[in-house]
Amino acid sequence: METPYLTTAIRAAHEGGKILRDFYGRLDRVQRKDSSFRELVSEVDLLSERKIIETVQKAYPQSAVWSEEAGVVGPAAADVSWIVDPVDGTVNYMNGIPFCAVSVACMVHGRLLASVVHNPFTREFFYAQEGLGVWLNETPIQVSATRSLAEALLSCAFSSKSNPGRDREYLAFGRLNDLSRGCLRTGSAAMNLAYVACGKFSATWGRKLKVWDVAAGLLLVKEAGGCVWMDPPIGSPDVPAISCIASNGPIHQALLEDLGELLGCCRSQHA
Image (cartoon, rainbow, N blue to C red; front, top):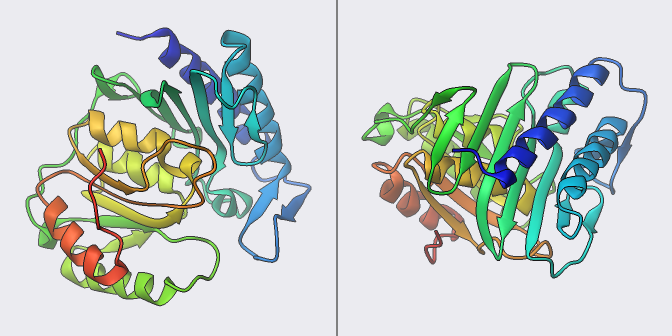
């Protein structure tokens, strides 16, 4: 059953996806956000973001929007908040690699209730409603049945900037790559989570991610029957960085143990 929140998230993601398709392969302006050569923002990020904000605030004018480029739009203490990444995977997009997504999540009184991750190039439209399940296009989906790391295909998302834990990230990446059928660094945390939800990946992990990178995808995984660990929990747009592990369930404890040892990140469990 589709709820008004989910209906609005679907509409907003469709609108953002149209802009991604319209500008694909013909970007005129790309800027750096700071000194990092990978922290980029394009005119498409800004146009998609503007359209998504317009769509959700037309339906819920008293809501807030937490977005990658605009920051917090609307009343920060609003009961309803929309968590938006207008282009998750900007580097892929600007290089003509169609592995990216529009990500929209709706949080009400601190709970994620509805979410969408949409890749407009592969026509993959993932959407979930708390307690009602998750779908890829018109088909209900669930996580993989893989029961061991040795049989699992994994993915990961590193932070863009160099940081004191970067060496440990590379060690974790290499170790899990060796223990599994492979660990892919795809460039889109949102798509990684969506692919865990539909069983293409058995797990994904990331460190120093932003709330808009993961909010929508984490609900997809939970509604698909998977397990999620994150630190800190989603609760504010001011959280500087989130570490997360999302899996199909049977391999979750093994990941917590391996990544906890190598990243020092798995001190507590958050649903």
